[in-house]
Length: 244
Image (cartoon, rainbow, N blue to C red; front, side):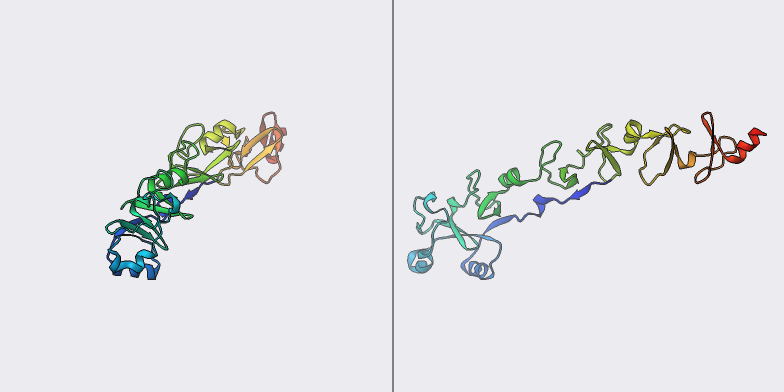
């Protein structure tokens, strides 16, 4: 059994930063529908009258300036894709802190600062409940830090290792064998079956394939007939010799 590697969701998510640029760059960004947020300033009405008349803060009635259409010259504004905000209104939808020139993450028409996004949507380890920021593993569709995904009994890391489970709990091969596996009648070591190991069972006894041998001549009895002699198993030839 193996655990799948968990992709780093936080690092793969889109993180955007604001940029202060000139008018020509703003026009190019709009034309190309670029993934940038543009921080600019309202210019005097006579030079940007048509542009200013089209402005309406995306917060609407919740505009922090009290007027969603306020275009006072010198006031800064933020533009992202087809929406616009006053600089003070461009804030995280959770903590309400203005984004400013920090990074942000858009999700379903909402804007999040990086910290709030991670707190709300980040993948958390099922064992320690802390955010997984640098990859991990999944086991039974649940995420784990690599260092948290350990053997239930000895706490050895199982990331990248073969393991098995019992009652939905993972165990390394050694612990599983010691705790739960059948034991070979000949060598008394556990029969784990991990890695394709084959074994033979007879009545209430079990043997590794390599241990299933005649007690007298030591030849393999796998696929052959055998005779029980008290606690021993012997091949038919040795049984005949013993009778003689």
